[in-house]
Image (tube, rainbow over all chains, first blue to last red; front, side, top):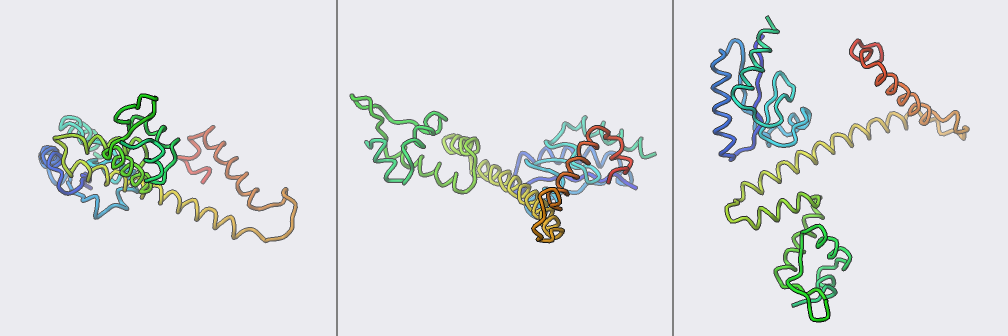
Length: 89
Length: 152
């Protein structure tokens, strides 16, 4: 089963969009079979964001767990995902 | 120029509140009169009105400070206010969720009450609260048991 990365942000945030694209490229680089990416509009899925404990977008959840309350660097995200991919083998 | 009393009366706030906002750095008088009385401009009155409304909307003093900083910043735009509003909504929704959970827990406790004139020792609500505190203490002393499902 692939690891699910969810990026929570609010619409219209230019800074978030740029950082998000960089992180999305990290996820795509690991291959869709291993990791999938989903953009989440926090205004449309407010209940889900609250359930995960998100208090300030942008934030990243992995497999339904808030792992990065603020956007991480590409290297940190890659390291976290590789760790999880290896663990799931 | 308006005295503190006139400003307070025009916005229906107390003079103590105005002095408190001043201590918190949210508001300051334009100058002091020769007699040492605080004097405020129309801009200060508008600022105070903003603080009052923001407080009524549930914004904390630190959040109001952030909004006022954004408002006074040349390079700020409405996206900055939008971000603060979204964060505030997330915090409110999170509190609503916690309140709902508390309300449901209380409903369960109310259900088990038989409305009899029992002594406090036999009160099922106090008993249930007591036992949940005991369980919580046991869990915090032995967190492993929670993970293993020994104390659901």
